[in-house]
Length: 228
Image 1 (cartoon, one colour):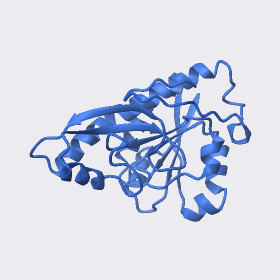
Image 2 (cartoon, helix red, strand yellow):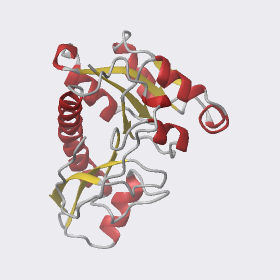
Image 3 (spheres, helix red, strand yellow):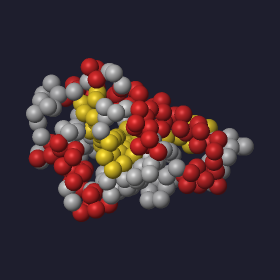
Image 4 (cartoon, helix red, strand yellow):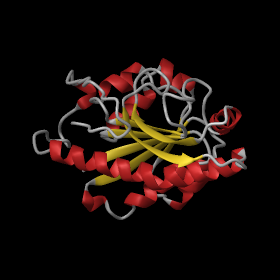
């Protein structure tokens, strides 16, 4: 069983799309076990009231960066993988280094490396895409490291930018791609992790105390092959 935690900061539509993908399907090997949020008034917390069996945890910068509170929570719930879904803070090194490479995923609303980095999220990205008269945009699903949007690209899905697009119309098409493809890629990753569990007992192996951290080279194609 691959246990995931979702980190979210805002509306939570992607977090809910992920949960709905796997709801009632834990027997297939993926379990959304925990949702963490860094804003006490984020709408994702309202959405989570529909899923009372999934614990939620609200934390602040001190919890994340100055104490081990979040790290300990992940360990207590035996979280094996993390999906960032509209989460706009960097994860600290103790969390990134605790999980083997490519067990932490992020979703970005552009075709990285374009329009990535600190401050580039949500409408800020779409405004920049339109201002530069790009012909295409899309989403990038990538692994997470200690910098904004610089992890290995796992998959990119493109969409056309129309001449009469506004931030709102472009955002709507991007959201549609996110809700379809991010859960699918998480499913793909879970299946790969399930294969690797033949060699590693996930339920008993403690990645949070392990030095088994890999850093394989990333390719440069838009759809990557990833090994676990």
